[in-house]
Image 1: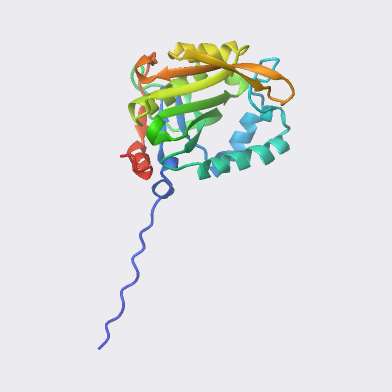
Image 2: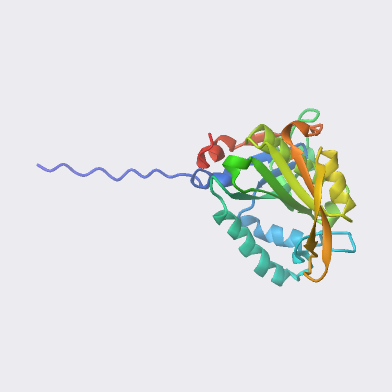
Length: 245
């Protein structure tokens, strides 16, 4: 006599389990870095279109920050989506949103990350790599909303990213770049131990005139470690996702 069939077993998994880049969290005393999702896009557009530079010249490689909000949406959201297809063990791009915690969550003990949920998205701290298993080198780019600059938050975001990359993810070098006139970016790099490894001639943000760009490099052992600790979650899962555990 046939037995009644058992209902199929459904193994539901969270989004972070399905796509581990979404599960990585890097917490510093005032900030949390995590890969942006679609639910973050309205806050991203608001931050990006509110002004991100005080300089008279455009500090970026493309003039994306000069677009009106509608043009910014058309250009930026496809770019954010494209970073997900740029994720593999060899080449990856993590588009970290920089989230400012509520003031009451800043620190639990001196120099330690707080435990509260992040509040507002105030900028981006991208981290990407090519030929990762061979070179073990991360590159980065970043921006902050203009009204959140000058408070040490950009240096904290870059420092938190470097602590994760070197101490938790196996990076051996970090690289960055900035136009030679961009003193603020240069100071952030030098404060963390980067040295100038050369210069190159590149088009300006509008693709009209040439600019000179400083190239910065940072070996792991030369990191000038920030005066804070980070809390990292989701790192082991991300390393397994990359086949790098």
